[in-house]
Image 1 (cartoon, rainbow, N blue to C red):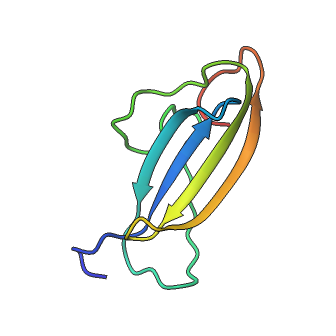
Image 2: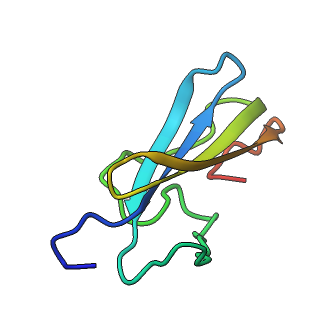
Length: 98
C-alpha cells in the first residue's frame, strides 16, 4: 500500500431507544493489510472520546438502553463488516462508553 492510498477505517455509532444517533466517531489504520488479517481495536472507556477527535465530549444523555454499532470500511468506504450490541445505563451511571 502506498502512502497515498486510503487505508481501511472504522465508524463507531451509539443510538438511543428511538434509533437517534447520540454519538459517532471515525478512525482508521494504515500499513500492510492483507485479506484475512486480524486487527484489534481498543480504547480507554474512562474517556469521553474514542481516540483523538474533534468531536465534543460525550456523555450518555439519560438512563436507558442504547445500541453500540461498529462498521469497518474499505479504503473506498465500502462497508466490509458491521457488528452491534445493546447496553443499558442505570440512573446515576451516565458517563463514557460501557
